[in-house]
Amino acid sequence: EMSDKKTPLYYTHIDLGGNMVSFGGFLLPTHYSGINHEHMIVRSKAGLFDVSHMGEFIISGTDAETFLQKVTVNDVQSLEVGQAHYSAMCYEHGGIVDDLLVYKKEDEFMVVVNASNQEKDLAWLTSNIQGNVTIKDISDKMALIAIQGPRSRDILQMLTDSNLSNLSFYHFIDGKVSGREAIISRTGYTGELGYEIYSSSDDIINIWTQIMDAGLDHGIEPVGLGCRDTLRMEMKYTLYGNDIDETTNPIEAGLGWITRLKKDEFIGKEALLKAKKNVTRRLVCIEMAEKAIPRNGYPIFIDEELVGVITSGTMSPSLEKGIGIGFVNTPYTEAGTDLIIDIRGKKKPAVIVKPPFYTKGSLMD
Image 1: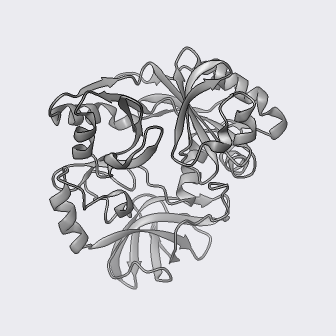
Image 2: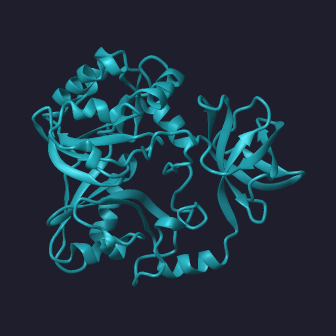
C-alpha cells in the first residue's frame, strides 16, 4: 500500500488538534473538538472543512461537451458558463462509476470526483475519449476548502470583492479570496448555505487562515470528516462506497433527478431505461423508533422477511435519534412503513420517513 498523502493543510490540522485518519488515501481530521459539537456549529454558525482530497480534472478540446454528454447522466448541454451540476458516470450495465460535479467554464469543464475513485475515474474517462478531448488531472495542484453554515456568506464576503449575494445555488465565479486567485462555488454537502473555495495548494493555507480570522466573531470553527458524514446523512446525500457503487443504479438510488433519460446516447442509457421500468428496491430514509443506531450492513426486516440493508447510519445530532439510509425492496418503500432493523442480533423498530431527515437548513437562504 502506498502511504497516505497529506493535504497542504495537514500541519494546520495538527496545530488545531485534528484527530487524523486515513480517508481515500489522504490523512484528514475526523474532528477537532468533537463530531456532535462540530455538527451543531455548521447547523447554527459556520464550519470550515478541508476537502482537498477531492479529485479535479480539466476537460478541454472542441469535443469536450459532446464527450461529457456521453459519459455522464445529467444534461451537460443545458449548463451555462458559470454554472455547475451534480451528476454521475455509469457503466454500460447501469452501475455507478462515481458521482461527481461538472463545472462549465469559458473554454473548458472542471469535473470534481471522489478521492478514492480518482484513478479509476481517470482511466474510465480516458478509455472513453472520442474526438478532440484533453483530460488533465490537476488534483495535486488544486486544494479545496468548504465553508458551510448560515453565517458562511457574511464571513466569506469580508474576504472577496465578488458579490456573494448574486451567486445562486450551483453557480460559481472566478474571483479572489483574500487577494488570492480562487474559484468560489456554491454547492455544498450539508444542507446549509455554503461555499467551496478551489485554489492552488500554495495559496490555500493563507486563505484558510484568513477565513478563520474573519469568522472569529461569527463563531466559525474548523470541522472534520465526522460531521461531514452526519450532516450529509441528515440530508440523504449519498456517499460513494456506502450508499452507491457499481452494484447500484442511479434510479433505485434516488438519483433519477440527475439522470436525463431523454438525452441522446450516453453510457448506461439502455440499462437505465430498463431499470426505470423495473425498480426492485429504493434507497430510503429510516428513523429508529427507539434508542438504537443503524450501521452500514445491518439487515432490514418486515416481520420475518428480509427486505433490505442499511447503507449509512448514525446517531443524528440534530434529531437526537438513530437514523439510517438503506435499500428496501419494493413495494415496502413508502414513507410510514414500519420496519425492523437487526442491530447485532437485537430486533429494533424503525419507520421509513420522507427525505430529508433535517428540514430546517439554511441551504436556500
